[in-house]
Image (cartoon, rainbow, N blue to C red; front, side, top):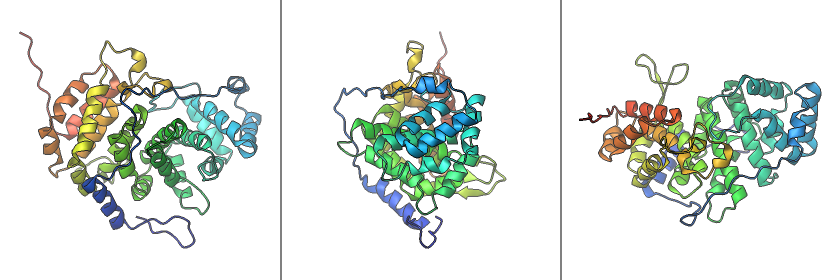
Length: 376
């Protein structure tokens, strides 16, 4: 990992030390997850709509942006709410892979105001947890499909007095502690989604997230009784953190490209973590939707108030399983022996496009074929 320059506040351990720490986590299975009683229902996230709708009707001109930036500087609690409302552009889906043209325009408008550091400072230790939560949500909305923002945040993470990926991972860890309150758990969910958005846009962010213990944090969440939304984004992050990357535009495999990130050892230890694999398989089995499932609970249709619905988890777990079994290291065969392919085959026939696509991608990585029974 990148060595820390003199005077910086963070201490990034060398690559070898970070790798050893990750391997030890899988080996001894250290866990400190938040535990919930069986049958506990995860409440909807509370959203304070105070003046937000009226505020949103004022337009998106320069005066509007000046007011928004002024709020972030002078009333961070109100400003953070208004910023998230502004960036969402009316899209309250729980899982967003792409943003609308309107949302892209709002990303650009906010960034042109040179106010991104204001959002990162909201992650600092001086901020209350609900402000950090809004900051994480804003980072996700700004980084989604925006490589420049992802790279910019990675650079800001190295500036003394600035905050970024490290603080997001601290939020994730806080959410996994026994006795964590709802507000802290919701903040951890937003932090997980922000990290997911960031590691999908920059390999440097992947390296930084790994060095800060993000793999162990995600595994901890997946193996715990955290909310379905937390487990979903933890699995989505894990998919990107354990697969290999190549010198191609999107980092995907190419027989002619040089491998730039080799995560073989991490995958080998991950597949040996029986509790992790069983947890992911359980997420696939429990979360799969059918035609009888209300569309409001399908992951590609669910709104943010479905954070407690188990039907949102399967697609992300499928992606993580595929990534764990993606190398030529025996992991693929181990997963097949544990019957993972059968669950993925069933998921590949899901009526929800997100579930079907992720399951088919995982099956391809596992080199597994689904055999359909002929109708007599």
